[in-house]
View 1 (cartoon, rainbow, N blue to C red):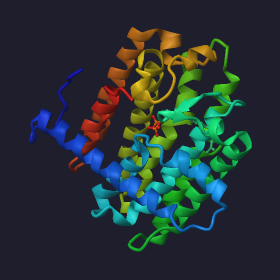
View 2: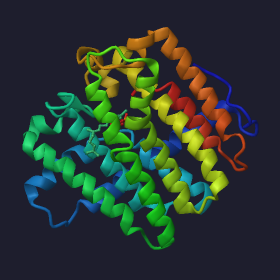
View 3: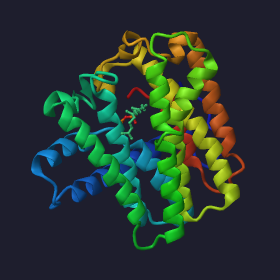
Length: 310
Ligand code: GRG
């Protein structure tokens, strides 16, 4: 759906959309190039390496590392020093997908257009591949890189680790599993989404901004924006599970419903969920307004997430 992006009148919207799509593709290639580099010549038992490489290099949108790189760029310029940190984020994300797909969790057969990790390598090896990516991703983040201030590296790492641990993603996954086949109130569903998905998306943005040297006031704005973008991302994820095309999403659709998961369309219906997604997109746009810098990439990306098919 075409909706006008606010306060970015200096660039015609179609041109902006095209520019952002091209940039997303370039950044995806940059992230994937670095991920391929770090799994080369590394002293890891070959079977374990094959398993983690399988999921890490299987594709995916790479949205979290891209958000991190672009938030860094707002304050820090050249993205190269931020690349290891951003790829650490992608490794943690991939680890959570491997664990999420296990029979003991969501029991899914396809992810990123290929068989899930445990279907190919077995459950024990999938568990270890997830563990390996989780810890290795953390190592990559805290190691930092030339050009980054140590204090910022520690603060940004704490931000991402907090968002993915028991307060954030792991806590959200716990509530998600505990809520299966129960009638949850909207507030409970929002809490699951905020912890499971929202905090990580938000921390990818604020983590990058911290590394770039954002002030407390700038971080507060990005924090608000990130929370709304995270909510939008999960509402659209819920909608895609109902009406997405598996060829585009790379996973089976309808699995939330089959497992009795609490979702926006399950609780409120498709039409109301779409209205909330639109309102959330507009709130996310408004949240960025006080930031006195060129946010056109983030504005357009919000629109792309709102309209996403994968
Ligand atoms: C191992 C850190 C760790 C956590 C264990 C399993 C678990 C706890 C958490 C699962 C959290 C989870 C899978 C949340 C879903 C978030 C979500 C919307 C995933 C899909 O993300 P996309 O669309 O996927 O960015 P791609 O494939 O494009 O990267």
